[in-house]
Image 1 (cartoon, rainbow, N blue to C red):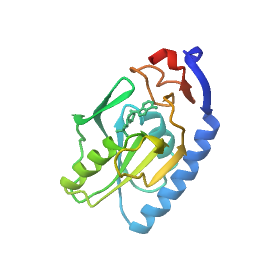
Image 2: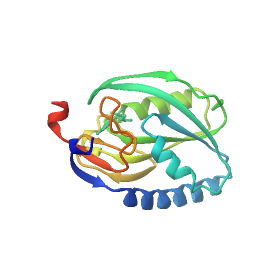
Image 3: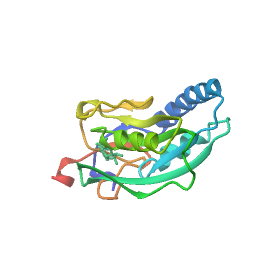
Image 4: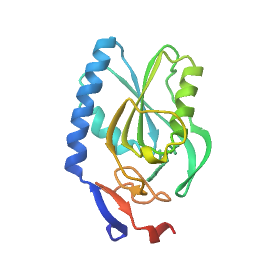
Length: 179
Ligand code: IMP
């Protein structure tokens, strides 16, 4: 599996270190708001990042997951579909969406809009990675782990056709794997 990786961009230590910083920043913001947010992981890519992040939170929060799909292979098909909804109601709640990567931005724009339509008080986004060169809609994560170049990356939750999510680092996939 590691043979399919062209280059390691971020190792486990770098990711963990950044998660500590992000958790501190998020904690300080929610303390100011006196809110008990629902931390909503977008399945499946956010799972390792979310686990790393929430164990650093010392404030009260609830955890939930939802699954949306917009991707087929390496290209966005632009249409976001809810495949698994949350268990907890988001009405009147502060929502912190946890995402693996913001690419075109379409998924998060739709997800954010959906939460607002359902009556959430506030929606913030934390994403492990940001690939700003690929953005086609105007959306910005409130908290970003690392900005990455315009390459297809895998590992630490990110997949190519459901593989490589279990790699403990973020790496660039060899183009011959998906070309
Ligand atoms: P967006 O709607 O284009 O921002 O796409 C977001 C989703 O696309 C992410 O949650 C990922 O699942 C997937 N994605 C975008 N870029 C990559 C990548 O480089 N590697 C793996 N998945 C990606």
